[in-house]
Length: 113
Length: 116
Image (cartoon, rainbow over the protein chains, first blue to last red):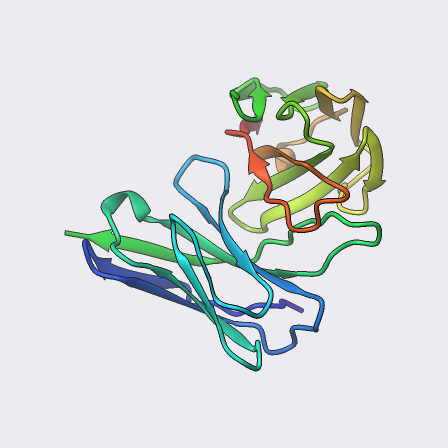
């Protein structure tokens, strides 16, 4: 069974904030939330990750609800170059450290003028 | 750093032929992953290595698929014999690996494989 649920597609006007939701109601205490994106014909690209606190970096912000059952990726000022498939991934840490990622179907974000 | 380098970028072959895909991970990275992407199945993890040792190959679809990592700077994914249903984009990714539990994966540009 999929660990995450995301909308299939979303649209956003350029310059506006893009808010991408993700449901992960069965997340366990040691599992992290990762976000990656894949621009057409390219390999996936890391965006951000978090455990329970909200996180921000130069690309985006990650808001995780207090119960950790859902999260939102925020692109504060979307541009046309942000058009991509966005993947929300929930994974734990493997024994001995390290991690591997299981990708779902993601959300196709289309940023328009 | 040049990032994860995959070759060839495109490969067209006939059914039954052997196909070898190549990957050079980022220098200093200890973990390497092979993924396959199709429209029907999305991104699937095939196999991953840590310190050149295969850790989990449960995603390898059949015995026709094999992967090796003879050293820290090179890995191959081989399909023998190839079949049309193997047509996909194959991605290689690397990360710092064990001891760095939250490390991000860096993906290559992929190899577009077409088996006729």
